[in-house]
Image (cartoon, rainbow over all chains, first blue to last red; front, side):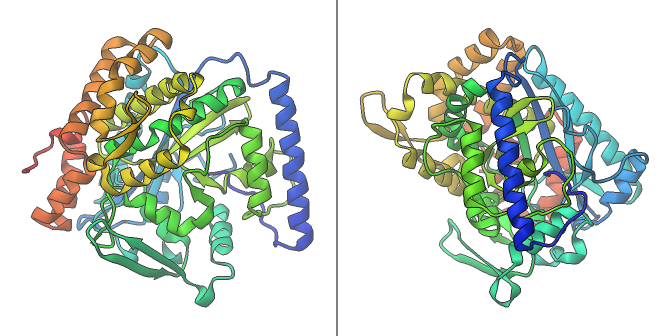
Length: 82
Length: 399
């Protein structure tokens, strides 16, 4: 799953242009960080994301993901910004 | 990778969860540690699920799932997915998305879906492997080279909507839904991650627009997070760059997941070495891309095109290609990265057995033909939960 947005806005021409400008600005910052070595000389790491399904007794999907999450992590929001 | 939360969370549909295993250094007993973490998460989820008379299953596409389990009523209230649904369905004639998949059994599956929730019938495993920017290009190309070989052995989703389609139907279905934004690639990568991101910004308009905020490289990450190549660069606020491997289905067991993680990492790192010796010049990218879709269609039975070492090519099954590289993968992981030798060799044996006997797709094909989807589903859930150290290639199966 990718990042969860905070507040959605309508795709007006101005909003799309601002988004493109913002993305290009971010890309410039990223290039600079990489050129400065911020992403270098780090130990090799690895991770896993695994998606799972919830199934009822007849093998049909069961829409209770939020209930299960609330059970095991009642203090954590089910979705959140990355 | 510190920004990946290490607890389960909601995803697209209300019957799915995503488990994030804490990233760790790629050394020693990392394969076993990732497996143990995944097991702890699954145990907690399964205990909770049992209270409601339900089970947690790791499927690419569950054999009992069909269009009754798609539609907006099944979608979580995630703003991300609401925005994606609106963007993907925008401008569609009659507000439906046509899906057409030519099966390997000669028929064509055609349907029209009213929204994006069909994507939620598919469950994947995503592996992240960090890389330094200077090594990005060779690692990425090395990973692309071996991706078809891995996919052939990993294939796990032969059915969708009660139709037999591809050995890994997820590949066809995901690309049918996401269209040009889901792809294997069109050429070897020559620049770094920023060149790929720049190309995507040119090619794909924003799918998600949000109020400006101060989160780290937020606009870029939201944009690049709505492009889904089967291997994708990702950046994280702790200044980690990773390759995200997206083509493996979820399941069926923890041991299979751990073995496949090792194969992905081992072949990518070995492939990087090959690319440093100009392997990209020995095999045209188009052959590698064709190999990927051949592997998705036929799984273990796919005939893949591979350099014969004499300037030509030969057709080989995945197990035959892997036989030539097991020693290289082991040397790479054990000697160069310090992974435990017994752990690597054990998980390589799991891969070798699966590549020569049957993978999840072949087991499901057999079980559904023999028992029907409902009982095949029951058996899959039973075998995958009874003993997490029993890989799928040793499950009961009649040839």
